[in-house]
Every structure is written in C-alpha cells, then in structure tokens.
Image (cartoon, rainbow, N blue to C red; front, side, top):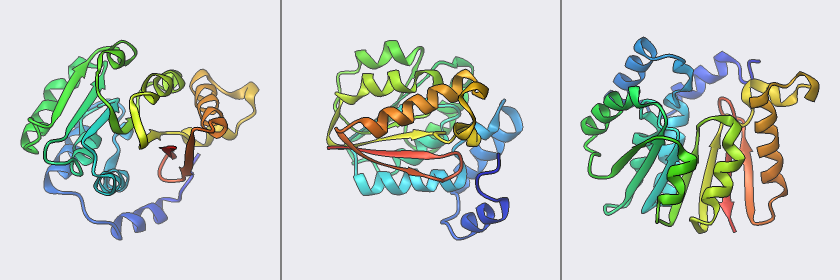
Length: 213
C-alpha cells in the first residue's frame, strides 16, 4: 500500500535539508549492494531522527536494529560531546560496512556496535538512556519495549519505526501475517500504556514517538 504519494514524498525531500555527502554515499551503497534497501531510514526520516536527537540532546542513545548504519549516524549527530550511542544488530555480515561509515563520520569514539540477539544484549547494558530507537524484527517490538522501558529516564523518548507496516495494520485480522499482528499488538500496547505520551507520525512507513512520563 502506498501510504504517502511518491510526488508528495519527493516534494517533502526537496523541502528538507539535503543529505550530507557521506549519508548520500551510504544510501547509494546500500541500494546497490545490500538486500532489502528499503529498510534504510533514508533522507527524510534520517533528517527527522537527526532533528529529534538535536532537540533531545541525549547523552545515551540505544538503537535496536543497525542495518547499514544510516540511522545511527543521523541519531549520533545530536549527541552531547561526552555522549554514546549503542547499536545492536544480529547480522554480522553488514558490520564491516557499518564500521566503515562510522569511521568516515568520525564517530568511532561515540558509537558502540553490538552483534547478536538484542533480547540477550539489552539486559547487559547498564545505562540509562535518553533516547531509544526500535527498528528491528517486528515480532519482538513489544519485547524490546518491555526490556528497555525501565532503562529510559523519566522524560526520555522511544521511537519505533514501521508501525504502519505498509498499511497492513488496517487489514482484517484473518488476513494479517505474523509481523503485521505483532505491530498491531505493539501499537495497542502503546495506546494503553498510561506511563507514556505518544504520537504516530505518518512518515514513510509510520514512526511512533513515545515520551516516558
């Protein structure tokens, strides 16, 4: 399902601060050489992540789902000088590419990469986070949320990507696949959570912005 028309999306990108040369290079390499390049945050969402990070001015960020590192680089742009971003991905094949662009962005001292199962890694992180970005396997969105919630400071933020899932969240339940059902369960979980304020943005494939009260 095309949630936002291509013409409107293109116009929005024209009216948005352009990608840096580095992010443009990463974007091109991802699209040319990596499976499922639509998983990349891309220009418009990347600029929003950077903007939100600059507004929050985080000291600690957790990203669940690194992919090729585009969103990590965008989020890290708003870090405090002594800040760190921790990013987790299960795919070790992409790690050389991720590390290459982290080095090119001069962020090697501020971004720590983890490879493995986020459900196992998150409990080992002894940090309090100002900002968490969830963009990994959809089946575990609710599990990731539960694991990180107590690690987010009061007034901190959580972001969850792909919460419209190509519009499939509007399908009859009988027609939903497992990923769609998991996203619907997650969205309902957030709607019912009295500990947070939240807004679902219809940006690309849907971005849930959550503030811990």
